Length: 426
Ligand SMILES: [Cu+2]
Image (cartoon, rainbow, N blue to C red; front, side, top):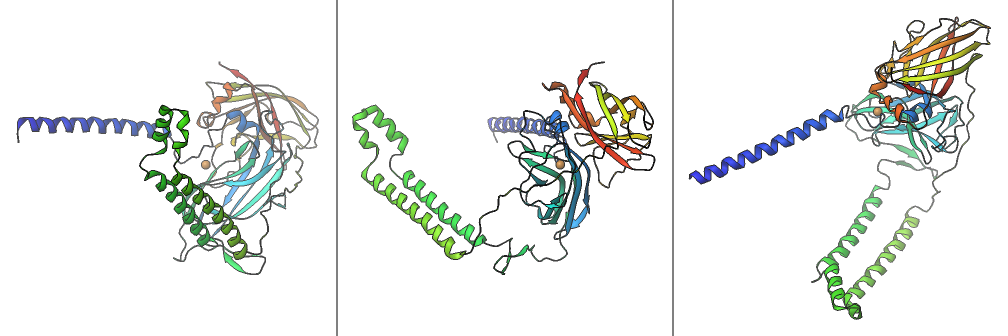
């Protein structure tokens, strides 16, 4: 091998190495900045939006481990915030309870809110308590982060806390079936029902599209060069743009397209003579009153400390009830801040976003008839982890959250608190 050839090879190797190096840097950067790549945007929503839209709590998924075909139940409660942003279309107009999972991995068998079946859209007036239950059947094996979510018309999805769920393969090798009895009494498997028709009609239209493209591509001259030439020759020769053959073939395609559409329509009528339209009605549901235990809360001021990652709230609280009350917990943006002095904080298996020692309360007990100035501090690194620091960039600096408290008999109460919030840099 000559010296020149060796040099060439050396240079090529060098080039390749530098390219590989670059690829490595890009890949490392991607891994570094992507963080928890399994998450699906739950931290991406504006901090203020997560704090002031839907307060989800008591979310529970059971069981956390299941097999394909098994039933999984998602339960919990939520309160739409009375501090709902003016700029966001309201949940009190049109909303739909849903489950946030990646793709059609589950079948939703049943869903209800406050006992009302929720296959349809509804509306959730603000400040009320809604208790939901969604029953699903596992369809595809995998590990999923399951969230309750509400689709609000023109606003998008507002999601609750996620729970990791493991779905294993079924014991048998038999394919997954989703049998349903239709109104005519016939039982069909929805996994495969009508699939032949879908594939067949797609193939027909793909063939039409390909034929149409081929006709234009095999012409000696494509349309754009022809157009350019005519433009150069002058407008009076515009008729040369389309030949007689182009015109005839296009007309044939047009006629064929209309014929296929009509055939498709007639075919569907013949194949499925008895059908009812998709149902799009709206169902009403009554919200429950918030169990506030006769505690009156007036928020005087609130601030968010940048370096401390904490929210401080000054409030005047009056206990108009008959039992002493102690503050247990504060929930905002799906993060639970628990007062370690009074609450053991019931944490369900697999629960995320819990700051076990996150809540400090200046007052231990508020006795019946008492009015006290209370300072509540909710602090944890979860503020940072869930990108709540963006609160500071909000042009409408307000916050909201749920405050939980209990009496000496173990009864739990809660209500929403909120108001303006100021950043604090020291
Ligand atoms: Cu998630």
